[in-house]
Image (tube, rainbow, N blue to C red; front, side):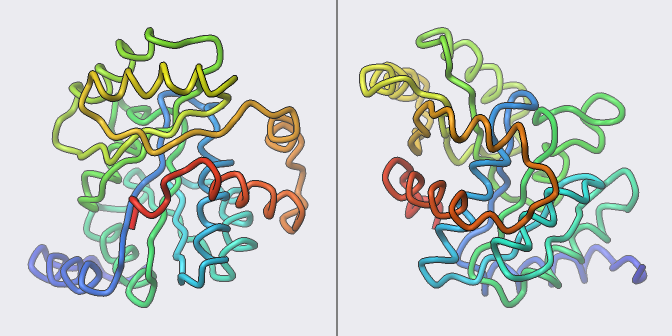
Length: 235
């Protein structure tokens, strides 16, 4: 492990990264099982297919998601963990590995604010340490305007992290999505799109196994992303 940078050096590294990266954001969710891994991999695959150099990151000590990231992006995915390392080192890793990338995509863990002690060590803390916005992935199955109460809580609970927008997962129909768009309009948060409810995607997330190179699945998710997600807005 390299020595931690001073605050001044860390700011320099972050400034250097921001001047090279087209975009950097963290994909999080209210709870585990919301679909953030599927959407993170899908966005990575889509951006790579468009010719972008995508640097993946994973919050926490996870070693399986990082392998999926690497298979999609063609470069190692790096763990960011404020439980195991100080914030200065997390910023150093982010700057070093993302310095030559066009887009930096970090996948969160569990729920946005779930850490080892309240929000300490959480995805929220990683986003705050790195000063990058959050894209919230929300499982919208069997819900419509009730999403307003949930999203309002995530928007206002901690206002020191920017919410770039919301992606809804498991949307049943265009009418369902229109209702969810109204929620975002009423709350003043950007709706970045959705993934339709599909059995293939649910089975894929349930039976991931250890095969990190399922090309057909990657292409299917990337195609859905291009059709239903305003991915250009993230750039």
